[in-house]
Image (tube, rainbow, N blue to C red; front, top):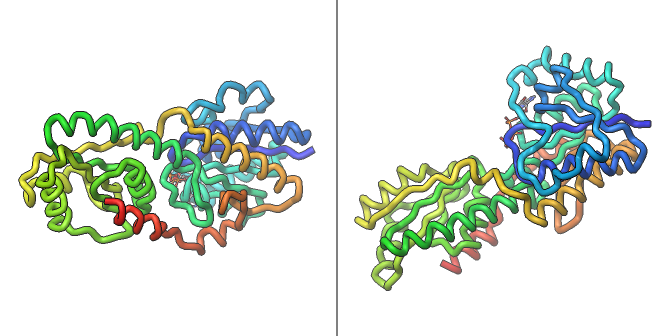
Length: 318
Ligand code: ATP
């Protein structure tokens, strides 16, 4: 009988709970013993393990966050930290470890793989910044949260004839800004993958107001600029009443969408199949609606690029 552990690491994202549930329930269906590790790699080093049965993961499918909790750990980046984790896994007789997290967590998973631990990754981050998967866990829910927030802002911006500059998450990846921008019909999107010109944006906003618009929205990915600074520059160039809004951590909350629940259920199911087949050292994702997997090396050698077709669509629809 296999003994499989699961943990969540790095920034949380909506759908992590659903992923844990799918891993645990599929594992139990195959007759595996399932273990939860609390607080990510920190808990792995501190032996913070709990046995998970079917009932332990009920009532979590629709909840944001992660009931196993998450943490960041500098110590785990060191050999000594990893030794502690590996010893604990061996002492507990754990055969396989499923790591649900973002890019940094995948580095940790890759390190364990290189040291002989059967490790698996599920892309748990709202940023959609992991290569070789079309989506990451929580990205779709975040798009919906941002889209709802923008419609609330529109109401008040219209009453006061203002420009709203909205900063969303995405340090190196503009997917949240671009895709929520298209879904919300905003006037400009600033993303780290493309240069932007404040004069052009200001002129475009001014001519919009001259044509009779009552408000405008500019979306900024955090990696492309700070809302406050962009708002100040637009005000300076256009004289329009411009206000910054930083959406912040509300983007990481909320009940996961049906898409995120289904996506994570499919990946959780698949990872247990891979464990059964002794395929190890891989991270899962979805490409063209198929659940696929690649080695950690393949993922780190691939480049995460913005979808230029979507960028073109945005520009044509403005
Ligand atoms: P998010 O995308 O939400 O920030 P993340 O998984 O990228 O999530 P990080 O804080 O970068 O979040 O990484 C989570 C944890 O993974 C770190 O706290 C650390 O314990 C581990 N980790 C990160 N980089 C490495 C590395 N190079 N080697 C070993 N472990 C690492």
